[in-house]
Structures are given as structure tokens and as C-alpha cells.
Length: 362
Image (tube, rainbow, N blue to C red):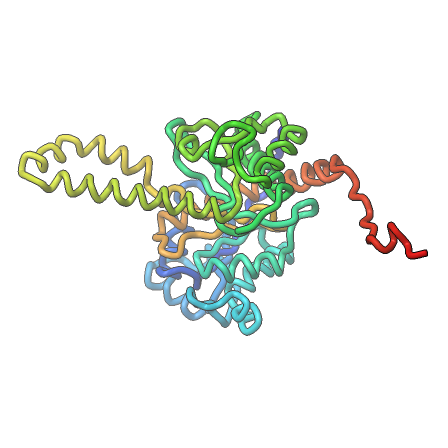
């Protein structure tokens, strides 16, 4: 069943921003929020963190503090801290306070560039998952020849069952329909071949199930098909997804290195660069990783977006944009509604009978 949505007038989205998370906080966070305002966002922002540091940064950049709400949080989770330890010992951290604001309904979304593991663990502990969803997944948009593709999971779940992959497919389908405005998004399972008999048992079982769950499922897609725009949603487990993502980032970095190296070989090559600069600028803008910043934690009972830790203001702005789109398009509500329908379609599980019960002793 492909997702269906209706458009209704909604109040401004309320977004909490982790002012303490990331390599360049709070500067990058404030710059991102200001860029969002400049771009026309009607969102209302709450800055979460140490109030003295936030106020000092607002004064430094000459911004009227009244345009932001500030929610004090006395503790900060370091980028290298272990998630479990941070959850136990830092209950007043900006991560925990931000997640609590979402849970209490005081904001509609939370964005952080802080410790990924701690954010994921905290968000799952505080918000729990949507009804009908077993595990949240990390999802992100990636550029393709024809536009962009949503890929999930990118690292939250290393080991998955066929049921988990089906739920990821559902979440991706809803997002593509609600946010990307694709009426019937094409959903594919990442595999080593397009044939149905290819892949491990989990992927093959997931493919069989998806054929009976949604007409949006188009079968398997190979890694080369991710960037060719053959599908709108790519589904995989977190191990495969993270390796694929890091491989793509590494290849992109290598190509940029070779390109710069080539243009510096001679004065003629440098002249060629000057002539090609407009085209290279368009190339850069299309593949600027900052535009795709903002990994979405889909499946949680609340909107949470993870920004890259090294994000500058422009990159953080795009993470804010991702959160605002998730909240304003009510992706969670639509996901839960369809997840419950999918759950109802599943055959009932037969009670397990032990061997002693099946063959009682005389």
C-alpha cells in the first residue's frame, strides 16, 4: 500500500537545537538557525545548553536574544564519551534535555551535531519507537544522476531481520511520498544482484514479504543503481548501509583530490581550470555534502535529526530543514498508521510447544 497524505494548515514547527553539540557549537548552531530564518522558515527555535555560553555567543554575533528561546542544560556530552556512561551520569545534558522536550510535547523536533551514539541511545530511551516499529533507522538523502535518493539504515542496526528491513522500507516510502512529493516512490532492497534468487536469506525473505506489502517495492537494486536514480528509496541493514556511505564519501574525496592535482600540473592546466571554473562550481554545488547534512532517526516516537559533528552553519541549516520537513509533513503519524496496518496483515504467530509437551512421557 503506497502512502497517502493530505495537506492541512499547521502552526509553526517548534525545533530544539543542541547548542552544545558539534565541533563548532554554539556558533554553527546559531548560524544555521539564522540561515533558516533568512530562507523563510517560520520555525520557532529553542536553544538547549549552558545559558551563559549561549548568551555570550549571541552577543558576539550581534543577534537579538529575544528571537530564540533558551532551555538551560548544565551538562555536555563529549564527542568521545561512551553512550551508556553519558546516559547514566549526565541526565541534564543538552542531549537528554532536548529529547525530553520532544517527549513532553514542548517542541516538535530536536537537532543535534553531538555524539552520535549518545544521541541515538538517548533518543531511543526517552522517546521509544512508534507503535508497529521495532527499531529506528538512520536515513539520509544522497545525490543521484536524476535527483536524490533516500537510503536507510546507515548504521543504527548492524544486524537486521527481514521484518526490520520491511519496516525500513515502509518508513522510507512514507518519507519519499510525504516530503519528496513522489506519489508512488520506487523502493528497492540493496543486494549483490537484481535477480530475486541473489543475496542472503534475510534479504530474500524481506523481498518476498515486501511484494505482498506494498506495490511501491520494485525488487533488488545493486550498489551501482543507488546513484543512477533507479529507485527513490534504498533499503539495507546498518552494516551494509554504513559501509556503502563511507565508500561513496571516500570515492568522492579521491576524485576531488585527483581533480585538484590535475589542474596544478602545469600553467596550461591552470588556465584550463579558469575556463572550466563555472562548470566546476556547478559540480561543487550539486555534490556539496553540506546540502545533504542531516541524518534522520526514522521510527522514533518523535522527530530527531543528527547533524554531522563538523558541520558549519550552512550544513547545520540543512539539518534544521530536514527536521522541519519531517515535523511539518507529519511523517511520524503517517508512518505509524501504515505500520499498524502492515502489522495487522502479518499472520498470527503459532504458540511454541516444547518437545516434552508434544510427546509426553507415558
